[in-house]
Image (cartoon, rainbow, N blue to C red; front, side):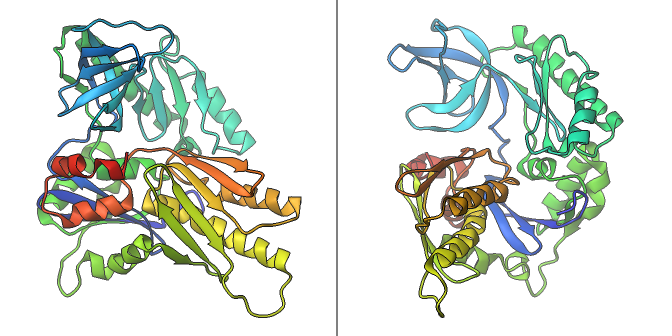
Length: 408
């Protein structure tokens, strides 16, 4: 995909309790998430937490962050805390019933082009920026960013191709946000929110390449107006691509064929374009994907058949991990291959196929048994849980309490 080629459509379906957000690439669904409609996002929120309990066994503290459940803060390097102590923390992951939200004291503020890291003064570039000339330009620009003596930056993938002025402007805005947090923190009380992340639709927009969004389609009049107003103050150039979908004969689900694509995404068996199929099983501990060749026609050499099927599987696995939001440990049982060059090429293809995934994804290599181990960052609910939430009558918070074991 060219950097400025508009290929994505974002669909937004607003219901009484939830927002369902779909991301389509050239008509094919690649992400689908469900969010609470009337609650502010919690992940990435910066707030004041009060220590309720310190566990020497877990090397962690439990904090009250005023977010509906406790927070779990790992303590490293001999860090000691006392009950009643108040800390500036950031919520980085949905919690579990036992531990609550995962917290960190290493605050980071994310923009479209930059991540500001006040407690890490290093400056680094996204590994996905590979053009040597562009990396050199951004390194030069990074040396001129504001407040370098007190803070650090990560230049995100979307910084490539952007003007120095736009990146500098965003850096100045992030520094202002941090200065506001820093000034307010000493006087804020426990549970105070000092930084509130963007609503989910704006986060989707922020994380997509500049110029890549063809349109944003909303089926609810009130939310359509609300989103237009929010974009006017954050990404004014995008207000023109927000459309209201008049239900008419076909709603968003039918018009963009979301229902059929979601049904296929929940199926255990996934066909491959060159024959063969995947079998995807989700357990509490991990996701397991088995690659099968099916019943091929003709007299194709088995090694070539295995390699061809595995390559098609690698590309589909990258899409399925993102669409189903598989996270944590993922183990793939590819068809056995004898040639080392085929194994190396397959791992290279899998890395390339997961390159555009916004979640941090690491291919750990192939074991002696031919299994490929993958780890993928956890940040939100698996697709199967989102679909249950979308269909249910519970509130978002009640649903998470009842179905916690499905996504922990």
